[in-house]
Image (spheres, rainbow, N blue to C red):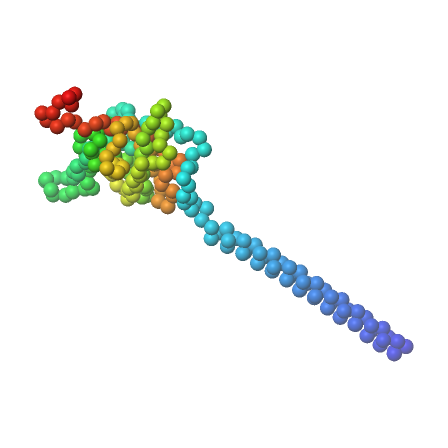
Length: 231
């Protein structure tokens, strides 16, 4: 009887050891599966995090349909448009300084003033300036312009004739964009300027960042003094 009980006890012990070994193996397999899944998830997360969701996309055309932006050609006094307090085209610009107290005692940021503002220019003008004052900016921003010649029925040239971008630091208000003549001289006709405002790091000329338009006209140069243009 003692031998029988001994054998029965040994059998039960072997069974228990076998069960514990099997449970341990299954637990290790389950742990390995969980670790593999976590590794895949972490790897995928790192890939997504490394990708910049706002990376600039240099696209030739970003408009799905023609963008109808407000025109800045007709402005009402003391009524801001977009971020602009005022915006004007001109033949040039002058820089002034705000002072406090005695003249020259203390100066603040420079203030820009348009020279001979208008929308009609002679074709020999080397550059046209868009001078503006914006609302104070909390963060730096890019102000950009690209210009096209208008054909019949207002159809624009397929590619811009030029473009310019100005980075305006935070808390500054004044700036200008320079529209340089394409080639040797401007062609006579009407031109459309598209204006954009973008945070730093974004594509400057994306259609979603267009805030308005302006137009100007190029005419023939004036005849020299003493010369009859009709001869």
